[in-house]
Length: 483
Image (cartoon, rainbow, N blue to C red; front, side):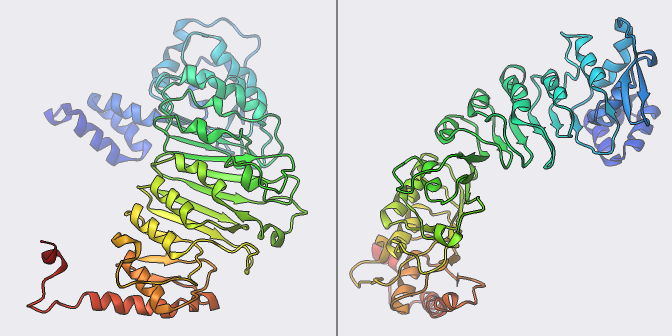
């Protein structure tokens, strides 16, 4: 054996370059230096537990039916340590287990439970770090899934396909054992079919998972309304995708100031829904949508989204992206926009989009003064969409818009369904002062509303060119004047 093959990094590099499992297996049988690392790679990812079961003595299992199911032989006999030697030899190499292939063989429920009950104190896959269990199986399989959890488990995807019949009642016991059996879990995704619920998934299932960075709950999985406050205390959480569903009629007087309640109270349906995608660190998206066959989108569009709908989100100071899409009109004022901007200093994307039919019964209260707050307090912002009222836009020779503060990152901005009302020159001067590198406004919008911003965009372009003219040699630059 060449001395180079005693270098573990080089051996692993060769095996990774081989890629194909067949080639890796051949390398394992060619040289002792390759055997252990090659076998680790060959067995690292397993679909189902079929291959491992086949490592057990044949008198313990058999193939039944049309050859698609492995079942336990009856009557079963007590096993010995020797029966499990070959099984454990390969099981300790499994890092990722996927139970989601629709065409693969399956293990009968009795055999599946027997694998754990035969050695109740033994961890079946001691180095398992990724577990994806989403194949539509009988509910009883999920009772034993927790036996696969271990301290090395970092990624868990559990649930059912879109048209499956797994209920939240079935999954809840498996989730309850996570913090005890897999305290180091970092990514958790729960998939649920678009069918009814038997019980809610409480956020308390997840708050003990202090190392959790990503939490995604399926599209129709109900959670409690106080999720934001509870999730905000999780130290490492960076990405959350949750759905909040409220099953009772909410009075339309917007009397609730809780973030979750207010958007729901703007609906006319018996089963309003608010979809939240939210992050405490790197990403936050919030997409409310209205469900219900008797709802009229035109009526819903006249209901306002106000400051109360956003205030709770201001507790999350590390947000980088906020996207809000609704059929309701968004009527934020300048002070609200300032509060949001000051709460999100790392914001890179802010899109507040309303598809409510114009004219709104309650017009937006946001002006360019509010936009100036965003330019001041969000210096990293590069994508911005908001409806504004530019009617009263004015500039003065004594003070720069925004108090002289500006955002040099943003190059494109969209103003939704709002027209450029008032003086195009004043609007352009205001925007150029707070976004000196602005190049496009309502890009790609060829409608009448979009065309109303063309003169503003052209004037911003002229101002930007003029600002780049070289200064006369005898004239000091602003930087030198400051000295």
